[in-house]
Image 1 (tube, helix red, strand yellow):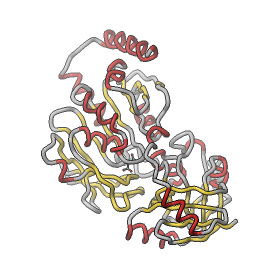
Image 2 (cartoon, rainbow, N blue to C red):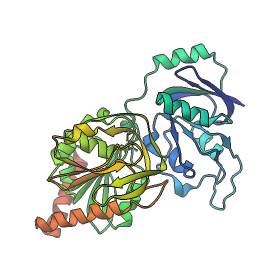
Image 3 (tube, protein in one colour):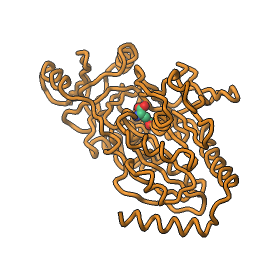
Image 4 (cartoon, helix red, strand yellow):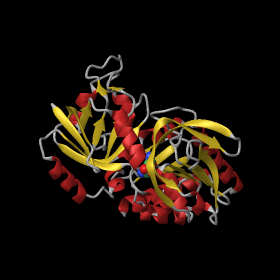
Length: 381
Ligand SMILES: NC(=O)CC[C@H](N)C(=O)O
């Protein structure tokens, strides 16, 4: 079956279709990971995007239930050089083709993904349409020009209702802006008592859950499309320790008065070098973002830059000068990518314990009682 990928600038790629049939549009981006296509496909931060993998062989190890980063993928299309339909892997439960068909995602293979990447690097990311139909190019270009990119991805990908993953350790409220499962996995692995809440949960509702700390998740789209989250963070800053990841980092920066803007073609892959300024140490990180915190906007705020990207010097980490709050632009939960940065979750828990020590408040029993009251009020709201 023939499939086509048409870019906003008129560049047309003709290849072979796999996965679902039909037509879909979105922002075309590229990911440089060599492995991890399943985690990429299921990362909610790709909601509304057509993802092209620069590694040329995709599908060879199949799909495994355990490797999903969310229940259902939100991406709008998948572009590969060569698609391997028959997996060779003892863990494989089914094929990539099967996954795409099941979730209505169109795949295209046998196109020059190096050329596509060079175009995107040169011009910046663009809108695109993937189709297995026989529409005229002019018609598709017209459709693309009148179809704006999505702005409501966070509401689409966030959990619709509150749920908990109980543990006997610190109580963490994980604000889900389209969270990857890896974040919850890292917190529960450390014994945390995690309560996952929807993206539009207010500061007051979070207080009622009596958290020890607040984790702001990754998520799709422009951080400026989520103003209610910025307000919530401003309300709780200084009251609870906060750790922001990716979109959570950008929202934290906006809440502290810094600004964000769109990168030309973003950072998506498993090997982005990041320098920790305090130690001059380089970490290899997993990344997936199209926006960044603007360096010049940090001056005059209470934020300090802790990490920078060694490729393009953009900001990769921030901390608050007065309050227990920090954030990173990359993914310490990895999935896919290197595990080097999971220590940041330990750092978050250390920060929580230090905050508690300096602030000997209510007994654990009183906290639990307050927490129970809060949950009841939340449920009755
Ligand atoms: N992975 C993320 O959280 C991405 C953040 C934001 N949507 C961006 O593209 O910059």
